[in-house]
Image (cartoon, rainbow, N blue to C red; front, side):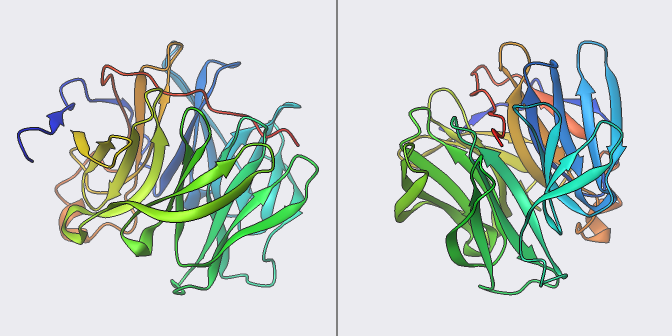
Length: 297
C-alpha cells in the first residue's frame, strides 16, 4: 500500500463471530440502537445490540439480499421474490414483486434516500452478464427501472448533499457516480468514479461518510478502502479474511465502521487459513458516517 494511503486497521475487532455464509447489508437502526445485517444464503436477518453485546435473528423464507427498517415499523427485505414486509418473528408478505418470472434471479444490496425511496438491484445465479437491473421503489409501492444492462448489482450510496449517487455493478470493476435529483429520485450523467484493479478484489458494498468520502468493501481483496470525493485513495482497513462484502457506519455517534464478511464464494485454499470468515467486524476510523434512512412505504 502506498505510503500516502493511511492504514486504519489499528482499532479493527470482531464485533460478533456469526460465521455467516454470506453476510451483507449493515444498516444502523437509530431508534433501536442496534445494527441490522443479513446472511443472504441462510435467509437470516440479524440484529446486533453492541451495548448489550446481544445478537438475535429471524429466518425469512425466501433468499434475501438486504434488510432495512420501515418508517411505519418493522423491516422490509429485498429478496428473490421482490420487496418483502417482514414481521417480528420472520413471517413475510410480498409488497412489491420484482422479476418473479426469473426464479434464478434475486435482489441484492438496498439503501434508501432521505425521502424514503428504496434503491435495489438484481443479479442472476449463475451470473448473467448484462441481464439485470437497478430499480427504485417509491413509498407508494411503485417500481421504477433506473438502469438496465447490469450484471451484479451491488453497493449503493449518496453524497451528504444527496446530489451525487454512487453505484457498483461488480462486473465493471469499479464505482460509478451519477447526478441525483432528490426531488424526483432520478439519476443522470453516469460516469466512472474509481476503477478497482482485479488484483485488489471485486468492488462490493459501499457507504459514504459525513465528509463525502466513499468506503468500498473489496470481496476477495480482504479490505475496505476510503476514497476522497475526487476519487483519490486515501485510507484502507485491512481485514484478516478475504470475503469482505459490505460496510456502513453505526453506533450512537455514527463513528463505528461495521464490516460484514462471508465464507461462501471464497476459495477453499483461502478459507482454510481464515477462521474469522463470516464474522461481523468493527473499527473506529476517526471519522463519522451518515444516518441510514428508513423505507417510507
